[in-house]
Length: 607
Ligand code: G6P
Image (cartoon, rainbow, N blue to C red; front, top):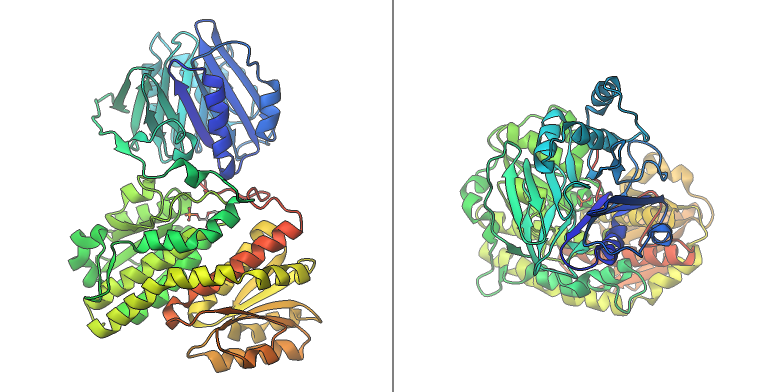
């Protein structure tokens, strides 16, 4: 979704802003703009469409050493030039960029209109720009502070002012902002990827905090003007992790990275000799966690699918009743929570608005909250009582891949960690850990034999409807496989628990309809073979994901993609891989923009 970049220093701001915006493109956007400021004033250039459209019209002839830039994903107002950020006051002295939603923008608009202010756009952000201009009395920081006291809603915002060249004022409430610290320069961004090429030293702005940023100084205060002291922190991500390198798409890069991302996720967390799991992030709440009467896992999209695998894992290994909920439903459902309930939020970005809101609801009702999050320093990582990072590195592809396997891995580790403190024997835990440790090599093996996935995509990518079936631990994988296909190839796909097929969706099966069936060895193997027969009888084309050594299944399925044998609870980590590859190849064959799928945003920071 929307992205923010800012620069103030001694170098030319424009190329730094454009490069920063380019690195934010992956989040999804439909317009972009920049504001450059110097003694002469503030100059704003903005354009609907891709960043290249902005580059064509921006005046690069004038040197500027400070400015702000924005990519917008439309919420209030159509994605056109006028509604693109930055927004200005009538006199063009201020330029504001903003992520989030100003909820009382209608009332503020009327108030400002009564004072004679004329608006040019439909956006809530213009209200903020006009309000700051009205309140300005020679001190930008003070005007922003006053304006934000009038505002309700969420914001990660930045503003420049013609009267104060070389100054950026930024503020955050519910939408992330980080300040990059360089040599005689500072950067501002909503996402570390935008500034990583310049610095790995950052200060995370907290909710309700403001920053006045110049080339030499960052002054942090609360919205009530109290000084805030913060340490500079190091971002662990490296530039090559956010660059494509020799890969064709980020999605493919991240799929093939999974053997190493999973190794990183597991590193230092399992002790094979002792059969023990070490999760430093849970140490302080282990007692409370072990006594939990109930676990609720919340997430959205792919994270919700990982959470569903987590539900099965927690119940089986830790014997704690567990439910998985869409974060968006949980927050408005008046859920029954007590102090014996633990709420776990699963999220790659740590910034998904619905999941944050669910977390806030859970906290308010006294539940212990945990985060299973990838982005270090993200809102969820900060707002939860404790948690476990994925450590799978930055995920740039909009279709989540390595984050899914990272989330499942962390949930498996957590389930084993809790299980050991309850009913799981050391022998069973040791066996589980050994199987988990072998997963990265198994994934490597699946990736080296990936031709069959491409062949499946080639054969069926022209079909409009696909079904994905799975049982038990592989039911969430069926959902995830269908989501991957929909997201990037725009093929309609449905994922189902296989037994549910006969309660309706079976009516959809026609001659040659591709039906992906996850039919790995395990407790429900015979049942899923029956489901395959049901599909075949109706003319469907079965693509089976099966366990190595299962020769019989090739008699029943048109295509078989084999995965190595592992414990049933860990199968999702293997069976998800071919489904990611099938979706990827289908999208490429159909000529879709894999890394920038239509209408989608990497991180959904609005409701
Ligand atoms: C968006 C993305 C999905 C992702 C979901 C949750 O819809 O396109 O890929 O699964 O948000 O994101 P999160 O960052 O919370 O995991």
